[in-house]
Amino acid sequence: MDLHAEALLFDNDGTLVSSMESVDRCWSRWAREYGITEEAFSRVELHGRPAAEIVADLLPAPVRARALARIEALEIEDVAGGGVVLLPGTKELLSALPAGRWAVVTSATRPLAEARLHEAGIDFPELVAADDITRGKPDPEPFLLAAARLGVDPARCVVFEDAPAGLAAGRAAGMRTVALTTTHPADGLEADLVVRDLSAVSVQVSEDGLVVSAECPS
Image (cartoon, rainbow, N blue to C red; front, side, top):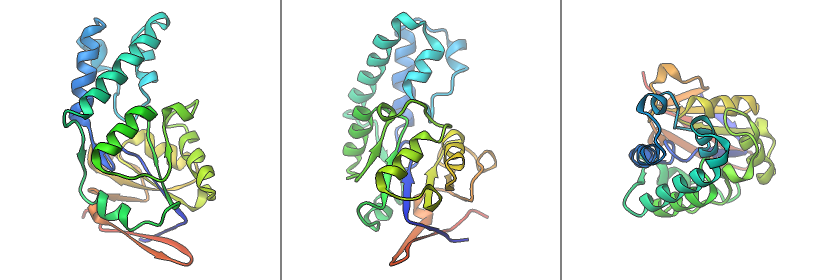
């Protein structure tokens, strides 16, 4: 099945790049610093959610601002230490897209997202980060904002995501979705197309827009 679109919206971590080891390393250190038990920490979903939501799940309000600044500092510091790996197919696919027809939509803060993208060598035309929104994924706000910034009808956007919360946000925004099995098994992902990573995706550019084709796992 081909998907027709005017713009493509990409999650970052787990979609364009992998920072899972960095995330686990930094958040584990952060949890130890703040005296959070392993049991409490294990119940919290780290991937695909804004750091502010995770911090709010684990700590009382008076210390959240400082704790949020601390985890951001740890993760940005870790980027320079090799905490980001470019995922297969990312460079090839993005280089084929016209400027102004794609955006990165991430749950990370802008400083952290920019650090990871720059480290991976990705020049992004538009970025929606946690700083830009009031409600994170699975709420549709991040993807709707990206579509508005690109001047595209949400129904004419295709979302690329690896996390269930991000795919739910794309569906809630009225967009078509492509799921990557880079961090979650295929049977836990609800999407129009499911692929192993972006190396299985190709895009044709025409006067009518973009045509997304994918090699789906059997």
